[in-house]
Image (cartoon, rainbow, N blue to C red):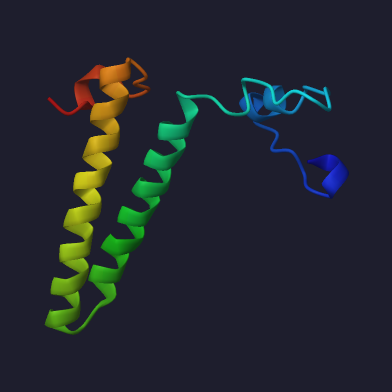
Length: 100
């Protein structure tokens, strides 16, 4: 990333990913089956946060209803990601907040 002009995030997990210098092998730590659903789940969580903010800022009832419908669908998808992570044993949540 640094060679391309990007700063590598200072977080330890990201530093570990970019310590690999081999030009021919993509390190396992870059594309990891456990991290892919975690990243998608976090993107879904951000989307839900933005949708909740959109509902709070919408003044038209019809607009709020449309956003609410979209948010409900996205929330169901978020639940599926968490269930998938539980199925694989890839949970990174404390046990008391997992879906039952």
